[in-house]
Structure formats: structure tokens, C-alpha cells
Length: 433
Image 1 (tube, helix red, strand yellow):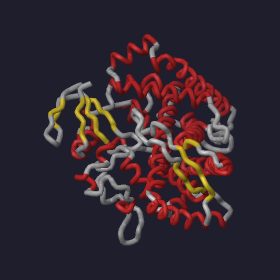
Image 2 (cartoon, rainbow, N blue to C red; image 1 turned 90 degrees about the vertical axis):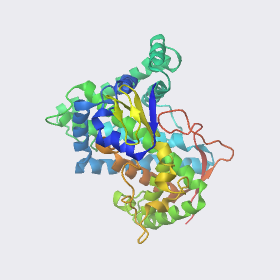
Image 3 (cartoon, rainbow, N blue to C red; image 1 turned 120 degrees about the horizontal axis):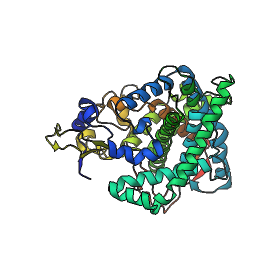
Image 4 (tube, rainbow, N blue to C red; image 1 turned 135 degrees about the vertical axis):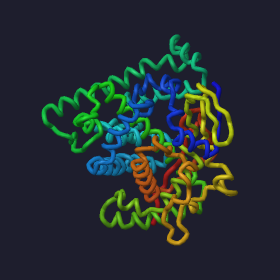
């Protein structure tokens, strides 16, 4: 529990790039997540991490994978999210937008990862066993970060508190994925090929890889679970804070909507209610607004590294072996020394070129903005995250006006990811041209 906490970009760069090998995730981090994530990329260090990063990067950057991801995101928005939102709009009912975003990202990431529609997004808001098991296991895992190691280990051994439900939750998660892996191997064995259910998915790619392919079912399960964790919470929470900020800042909302309607107007003339990748790439102000929202409300507000050897940080601080280095991403987004006197203001214009209004982050040093990590562990799914967020944000704002339910208290939940403690209650009205 000996922590050195910093918001100095020099220290962050030093730990994430300059002396990367001296600041791994570490054994404590690995032990906390091991029950759920095993030895997956999010929870690994050293050669194991390098191997998994290599094969994951290879697959995510293929043309086929990108096309499949685009199709999956668009199809899930058009066929599931839009009809569900329209149901609540027509009924005049308020609902928790954060919960809806978590349901959407879970369905989408499951489709991208292993080609299965989990059915979380629909008007009845069902309790889906796999989603519920994953959620319960994740909540228990996150709570381990906030107590001493011996404490959570004793609670696990005695099945106390959240740890009481952990074995059953893990059983539900593992049983579901093991069943899918066996079924996928069987389909591939009978020459069904990469396309499963009319679309490609990461599990199929991994099963057919040569060389560094994960040929063990346990390793494959860990890879898929890590991808699910990385994609579900981060994008859903980023969208939740974005919608709250936009609804609370009418001048920003007006500019976002004007840009979205300009591009989406063309989409609807082609009979498409959801924009393509090429079309969302034209939405520079929306991109800037999402980036600015993440600066103020990063999905992962802090990150922790273990210190392997005694060291001296660039700010002169002496750190000791086996202690922890914590870099506070949430605080870095609000540092006047980094962002200027308006550091706490929601101002998307800081990300736009003054001459043509296009998005740019070239003026921001990479270790000043570490929302997507930086250095060798920079986020492999950044492109997918922006595609998903921009598609959802543009579609929702084009079709609906968001009204926040008055009287609700928006505050952070104690977690490693930046949940809204009480959700985000909203009502929707049809957007008039």
C-alpha cells in the first residue's frame, strides 16, 4: 500500500516509455485480475504480453477485421439500439443511459470478439446470464483494488461480501466462453471458414492463425475476455459522460448537432439511418467533443505500476523497489500547467485547427493526454473505440433530443473505471429538422 502518486507528464513518460521495463503491471495487479482475466494481454507482462500484443495487433489491423467491425457496429446501432431508443422515446419513459450504453458495448464487443449476439439491447432490458456473470465478477475484481492484499485474499477464502458470489460468476463466464470455443472449433473443423453467422470475428481469426496462434483454449478464453473488458466499460462510460456534458452545455450541443445533421442529412437521403466510417470521419467537431470529454472524464481515471528497482523520477522523487507508482489521468486532464487557465472547462475547440476547423492532436505531447495509454502499451483498440463512440453519438443526437431528468446527482462510483454512481437518467424526444 506504499504509493507514489503523480500527475507530472515527465514522470508518466519516464514510466511508460523511458524505463518501461522497470514499471510493469506487477504481481499484485496480476493477482487481483487473475481469477477473471487469467494471463490475458491486459493482465500480462514480459514476453507473454509481447506475444499477445503482437497477435492481437495483427488481427485488429487486417482489412477484413476492420470491415467486419464496421458492419457489426452499424448493424447493432441500426437494428438494436435505435429501435430500443425509439421505444423509450415514444413511450415518454425515462431510462438509465449509462446502462443502455453498457448494454450496447457489451453486445457489440461480443459480436466482434466471438460472433455471438448476447441480446442485452432491447426494450425489455433483460438480465442476460453471461452479461450478469461478467458484471458480477468484474465488480468483485474492481473492489480488490481498494483494500490491502491480505484483506481481499481472506475475504475470498471465507467467501465474504462480494467475494461470496465470485465463484458462481466466474463459473458462468467460463462455461459460456468454453462452450463457444468448442462450437467454433467444430465449425472450423468442418470447413465453415472464418465467416460465422455471416460475419468474421476475432475468435475465428485466432483459431486459424499460424505461428503464434493461441492453440490452448484457456489462452484463447483469456484473450477474448481481456478484449471484452477493454472494449465494454471504456467506450460505454466515455459515451455516458459525453452525453451528460453535451446536454449540460447548450452551445456545444448546438455545434455538434449542426455538424451531425449536415453529414447525416446526406445519409438519410441514401436511406441509411446510421453513418458509415467514411461519414463519421467527416465529423471533426464531434471527434473533438469526445476527445475533450475524455480529457475531463477519462474512462480509466488512474493507472498503477509496480516498481522493480529503486529509481529517481524526473521530478526528483526517490521511489523504492516493490512500491507502486500511480499516475492520475483524471488529475492530469485538469492541470493548469498542462491545459492552461481553462483546464476545467469543456471546450472542444482546443482540439480543432483554427484555420479549417479540422480535428488535430498534434499540438498535444503524447504523455500529456494518456487517456488511451502511451508508449509500448498504447491502446490497440483506439480506432474501434472512436468508430463506436462517433457512430452512437451521431446517430442518437441526430434522431433524438436528450433531456436530463432533474434532481439526479451525478457523481463518481468507487471503481477502477469511471462509472456514474447513480447512472444517467434521461428522456428522449424526436429531433425535429
